[in-house]
Length: 398
Image: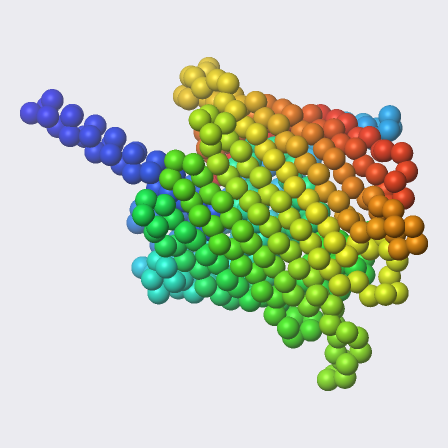
């Protein structure tokens, strides 16, 4: 009897572990905000509410054209999540971010989901528009690299949070899945061009005022459709468009409507042991005639992450530690237009390579070392400015 009880107990533990692993593997990018360890406890019925988060820190040593500010350390992010099963078919989740210590404090997510059907869920609150792969799936412990991709922060303004509402859903297609999202939000504001960067920059269009009201009363629209192919990975196509300027004051027209739009393709796939993650984005912005040509009406960016495990073994008492060799190739062009007078190319672009290593103790915690080298040219195409340096850091859910 003791042997039978032992076998039964082991069987239950193994099955529960397999179910947990299967649950992990079935998450799509659409569900990224719910693919966090602390939520598993709440979903198992241990509590109607759960709290968790992640912490991220790193060291930096960089030189630009031979000049360095020396060595520094930073606690880059400390984020707190709160999740609650308000009802069997109503979920609440929020994320509060402390960046660079307490230099920046932001409420990134605070939303309610009402499940009408798995293929039709209504969402409302502060949400993450589904532009590309990264904006919704940006938690640092999920990534092998310390810095975020340039395309995801300089072309796509990640992390972008906006107040809005919409629908999403997941539809089985044989043994595969299709997911969709469609949201209306307040949208970006005049800072897209009216900024101190003296160039078109979507990130400067973010403002605290976005969480209180729209500056022009015309909602932005964002959408993503993705296919998750069993045994391969996920492919997505997404878009975002909205009027960014204030074109009316007290009902009187003061300016033409100016539109800013983004289109992105992304994938996260595995070929044998090699994991490939990529995001490519195109931007189109309506620029007033009185702005200089350094304000690009079109932008482009792309990155490709390559992650390959070279060791997986027990190490110093830790089980199944994985050592990955990694490399990122990336490129952004802030202005893909041409000078009107000469027809020659406007530069203002960056190429970058980021090789390194990551040591994963689990899916929740890792150490990583990156060597970053990038080449940057200004608007006029002056000689390349070269930046190089090392970073060492950690990231962990809790």
